[in-house]
Structure formats: C-alpha cells, structure tokens
Length: 84
Length: 521
Image 1 (tube, chains in turn cyan, brown):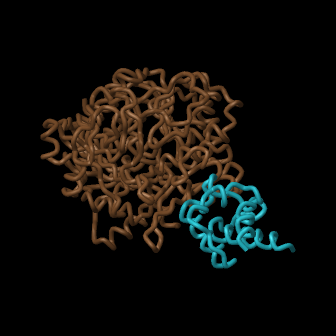
Image 2: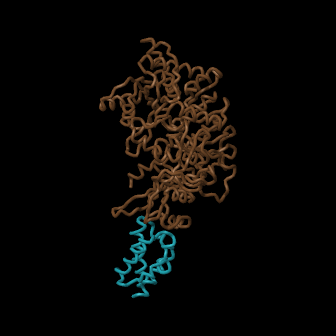
Image 3: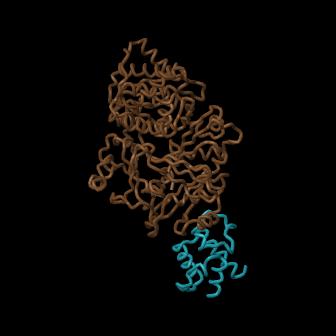
C-alpha cells in the first residue's frame, strides 16, 4: 500500500468512526464533498485538523482550514503529503 | 343550543334516518339513538348524577359510546372520554382527578379500572357495558327490571357550564384536563356548520378517537345536520388498504383526520382501485401535512375540496385554509394554517406579549367563545395559558389564549405556522426551527416519516437528531442524506445524527410521538 493510500484509509476511518458511525464505508469515496455537504461542520472540521496534526506530526495553518483544502478525502490526503 | 339538543332536534326532523353506523354492521336511527340516550340519562339521574357532575366514558368507539355521551350531556353532566388503549392506571388517574360521579365502562376494562381505583382509594359508580351481553340497551333493560328509573328532564345547561373535559398529555408527564364549556363547543360546531354546509345526505367519517378534539367536529356537525356518522374503530383506522376500501364502500362524503393517516392512505391504500365519487370534503388537522404527500393525495383524489384546519384542544379549530385546486410543482413549504375562524379573534405577540408588526413572527393568541374555560384543578397552569393581565391591557380586555405556536402573517390575516415555541433551539448561536429541517427531509423521495429533535450532549452542546422511517424500510446513507439536506438548508441546520425506524412511534391520536423519541435517545 502506498503512503498516500494508507493516509487516505486512515483519514477515512477517522471520519466514519467520528462523524458517520454506522455508515457504509463504500459511500465515502475519495471525492465525496465533506465540508460543503454538511458532513463536516465547523467543529468537526477542527477535530479532523487536530487528528491530522497529531497523527502525521504536521502543522495546519488557520487559513488552510477551509473547504479548498479539506472538502474531499483526496484534498485532505494531498494536504497531508504536501506537508511531510 | 345545547349539544344534546342537536341530536334531539335531528331526531324530530329525521327519526328514521340513520344516525350512526359501525363497520361491524351495527347501525342506529336518530329516534333510537335519542331514545337510548334518554334512558341512560334517566339511569344516571337515578344513580344520583347531577347537573355539573363529571361522568367518565371508558369504551372503544361504538354506537353505545355515542349514546353514552349524549346520555351524560342530557343529564346536565360533563363527559370525560378517556383513551381506551391507554394503561388503566392513567385512566383511573383521570377519573379520580376530576372526581367523576359515575363512569360508563366497557366490560373489558372494568377489572383493570377497579384495581387501580382500589390502589388510589377512589370509588365511584360504574355502569358496565358488555357488548356480548346486549350492550348499553341490555344493561339499561336489566337495571330497569331491578329498579325503575323515572323519566328525567334533559338539562339545558347555561353557556358557561362544563360540557366535556379532554385530557391531553401535560409537559410534566401528568395528564391535564382541558375544560370545554357548552358555549365553547357549540360556537365551534356552529362555525363548522356554516363553513362546511353539511346536509342530511352527508356521511361523515369518525376517524379520531373520542378523547381527541377532532371528534367534536365529527360527532356534532354530523348529528346536528341529520347526516350519518360512520365510526372507524382504531385498529382499522391505521390499516390503509382496509381504510381506503371503507371510505369508498361506506360512501364517506366528509373526511376528517390527522394528515399522517392521509399520507398512509395515499402511499399504501391503492386508492386507484376504489370509487370515491361521494367524497366531497377532506379536512385535516393536528400536524403539518408535508406538501409532497398532499400533492400526491390530490393527484389520486382530485375531486374533493381540501381544508387545512389548525387549533389546539384548548380552542378547537381556530384557523383554517382551503388548499388551492392545483399545487404548484415547485411548492415545498407547507400550506398556511390560514385565517382566524369567524367566531374568534387572533393576535400575534412577541415574548413580552406585545403585538408584533404585520409580517413579523410571533406567538398566535386566540380569544372568543370557543376558548377553553381552563384546566381542571390546575389554577396556575390555567393562568399561564393566557396572556398576563398587564400584557393584555396593552391590547384590550379579551382573554387571549396563548397557543404556544409561532406564526407569521403571509398576507394580512393569513397565518403560516412557523413552529412550536418550544421546538426552537439554538445551536452555536444559530436559531434553528426543527420543523424546517423536517420539511426538508420530507422532500426526500425515500423518506416516509421524519421527526427532528434536539439533544444536549455531556458538554452542553446541542446536537440535532433526525429520526426517519423510509418507504422501503432500508437505512439511507448518512453521507447522501446530509448532502441532500445541505442543498436546501444552511449547514448549521443539517442534522448531526440519524436514527432509522421501521415507523415512527405515534401517540394515541396518531401524531408523531416526540416524547417517546426523546426518551429513546
């Protein structure tokens, strides 16, 4: 499993466990909108960022916490890999 | 005119017409119903029941139940109908709470009620009606053979005297009795007659149970018009295929129920298989009718006129609105509750009790002859139900009943229901009306029923929980449904969690039971 795939799987698991308990994992695809669809509200988004910072030992700047960087699993994965 | 005179007058005009019928095949003509209720009146008086007393009615819906109601009214007493499907302990509480002088009880409930009375150290006279042993007629004959009950005069109560008490669930968990006077009831029935123009040719449904205020329109509007009242027992009342067939077979012309039953009929009733040419008026009340369901029903049954009636038990119907012949395809928001009925007055007030500017949101308050006397034995709750004196003085001398419902005037004098005052929550500072989220969920084609509740988590944060029942009973993807909501609602209103049910729990009056849902969470 490539690094990126591993990250994406971990983030996906976190989102389902935390915010969508019981959801069929197949429903959450790499390009499912997260922020703009209401799956992640503002507090959930902050929780996701905290998870990313702690798990991957990165730092996400406040201006980066937005739909542009976090709206899909692909975007989240890109953000993480770009910072490692 | 006293409520019982409505029956007696019709019996004079149409003695041989059919007054009430039941799907079990039983039926009774006006003269017979008048006579049977006269005999019960005589027996109640012989037992010591006096003008102003309360008399319980603890029976499933039947012709005997209708006769019992009129017999009690003729004795000058107020009837107190209880929910036959509720636990005996609750019904015993109600009987004791309003200190009934006697009760007409179906044989099947006698033992349970007696047990509860013994526990509560309460006793009263019971008239036990056994449907398998001659019913009310048989009982009165046996009692008459034992001891003669002399003919008593029917009592014409004064307008301000008590006619019936309907117990509703109180927020404290203890049922509270809504006291309705003779004038409260008759002013409402007169409005119904003037508005819906029933004739003796009409055939009314009696879908609502008798402890529910919808039954007042059914019973008295039909019987004062010489029409026929078709009783619908509660088990059949929830079975859409049988119910759809009954409406057609019994040639119902005026139907009245909660919207949820109509949704069920339309969804599962196979309406296309039946002939509904007799059906001319459909009335619904009690909760919001989701527009997609209403649209579908109107497509299936285009001929009748449809009316949205609104009002709490405390006023009975106080606003009404006729649904237009065609519902625009882009209409999603529920129809207005409409204009205040002609026998009443309405104002919209802010939290301080001051009238708001037209077009602003506020609480609907109602004054006039159908506004309740008060709650039985609950002086403080009665006072709180009305605008306080100092608030009211700014308006006028009317006794304004506070409905607890937020409305806004869509056009002058035509109100739109916004939500319950107590169903408005704040989440992170945003004001959220839970009903608006429900209206959105009902737009989803897979969703049959939706109820949205707010919960507070351990940290004091408000979370929005949507309880859903889908058409095919399958769970929906939370991602898809959140996405669906986010296309209609601001993100802060998208529910945080979803719970799926086969069907949402209902109260005995067929409304979605929010209290049970709240306890499940």
